[in-house]
Length: 171
Ligand code: XMP
Ligand code: MG
Figure 1 (cartoon, helix red, strand yellow):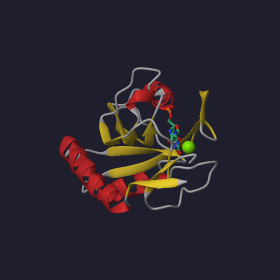
Figure 2 (cartoon, helix red, strand yellow; figure 1 turned 90 degrees about the vertical axis):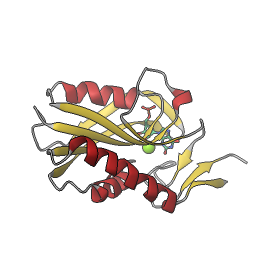
Figure 3 (cartoon, helix red, strand yellow; figure 1 turned 45 degrees about the vertical axis):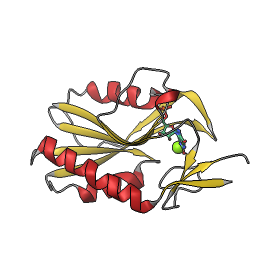
Figure 4 (cartoon, helix red, strand yellow; figure 1 turned 135 degrees about the horizontal axis):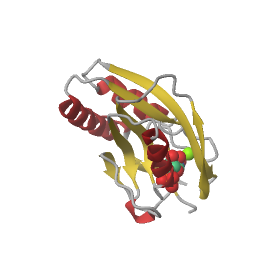
């Protein structure tokens, strides 16, 4: 069964606020947004459109660790970056921060290229689930430790195309 957590309207409102903070922090400096596939593709598209600064580009990276509802612990990365991020402003855009393992490995990986600035932007943050210390720079919503689907987030690859975010519960 699924219960609505955030409607698309609420999500869009929060995205506008996050985009305003990013615009304020970076003014018109060049920014490379790195979308973490697959879950963040819809969030990245919406936040990218809301950024007023047009001196922005988009890149993609693929990270996977989840099998159905369980975190497998090891992160697989597929790097699709087509540009050199050395000495650039980079913002990683991720759907959800959970154990912290994915973003921690991504940050370590991208830091090898020595960007000028490396920030992280997550739509959802499940702070209670953290296994490694990690704080995102831009956070949409803090949520409880429950599995969520919709708006890019999946259960076994399904439900990514729901426009609202739902809690998935067994009952
Ligand atoms: P970690 O544990 O590495 O997890 O911080 C981040 C990745 O785990 C996935 N994840 C979820 N996916 N509903 C989902 O559809 C959830 O409630 C959920 N919690 C974590 C997600 O892909 C994210 O990239
Ligand atoms: Mg996923």
